[in-house]
Amino acid sequence: MTFKDLQIIEPILKALQNQGYTKPTEIQELSIPILLNNKDLLGCAQTGTGKTAAFAIPILQHLYNEKEVGNNKRKIQALIVTPTRELAIQIGESFTTYGKFTGIKNTVIFGGVKQLSQTDALKRGVDVLVATPGRLLDLIQQGFVSLGNVKYFVLDEADHMLDMGFIHDIRKIVEKLPIKRQSLFFSATMPPEIIKLSGNILGNPEKVTIKPEQKTAEKVEQSVYFINRKSKTKLLIHILNSEKYESVLIFSRTKHGANKIVKSLEKTDFRALAIHGNKSQAARQLALKNFKNGNIDILVATDIAARGLDISELSLVINFDLPNVSETYIHRIGRTGRAKFSGIAISFCDLEERPYLKDIQKLIKQEIPVVEDHPFANEEPEEIQKTVTQQQNRAFTPRPNQNKSFGNNSNSRKYKSSRPSSRNK
Image (cartoon, rainbow, N blue to C red; front, side, top):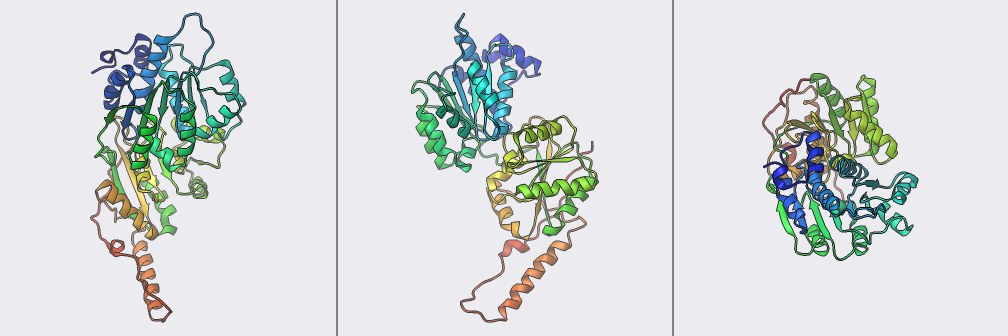
């Protein structure tokens, strides 16, 4: 199956060929015919499967075929709503790439930056608008955006919208859309809340699900290191010095933690930058650009980067802190092992993070191999023993209503040793 077999028009085919794309991914092959036939779609697929092209190509084709000759006044006919600035920017870039020879114009609006350049673009007129919910509603209220002519509506990363508390904003946006429209709803997971929301947005949609049983990227080699929290930075530097990786994405649970990791790496002559919510949009985009073009080898991020970052040939993802939401782990490690490339995901797990690891393994239905052979392995059991001793000592001191015990059996579970294979530059 090729894009030509999907009846894609010549201007879009030419743009795809320029990018070296000839064969569609599974979600593209299944979704594009449905969307070209003007049907609503409920799509469930993991990150990195090609969802953006699956909806961008048919929307561009519809708009190209519907263009009115001699009508130079552009109105917003397609609206794509997505949760983060980074993902919005990448979707806008995809529309620009695939629509290069169509004359279809798009722009992206998001919060965290001054609105002047965005409102100027809207005044000049656009066919496709990619937006984050907050800035979209703000500019609607100010009168810069009208959704009265929208024919195509896409809600992308719907489950992430739910996690970030955007559901009320989405409902407000949907109320402002024309009743007669084609609606597309994409989500990596389908919890009950998302299914309920899709029922309020879609009519009688076609459904496309790509490998729902695959919880983690099959091309990603996973491993976990049990480590004393204070030794995490030393282990990180040890791993980076032991193997030569072309590009490394490190996840921190907090913004302060991300900055601290960058400072520690800079002291050992590693080139690294941080990307998180406290950084300005310009700083975040510059860091991402420098990472993609190889000016820096390491990007340290909070979970603002867990979805939507399409970084080709990313060698390694390191979970410096395990996420306390199990599903986030899947999206983090999904940054590597994309397309035809393989990848490695390493996680550090301190004593307090053991419950998070247990929940993650329950979600992915597998035990992540443990690497026991590392310089700081003997420190972690000491931490456990210290905690056990403290609990035992407290047990000898009677206290009112004292009925506590240490941890659970998972804290002392032994796993087989496994070392990640080398990925040399």
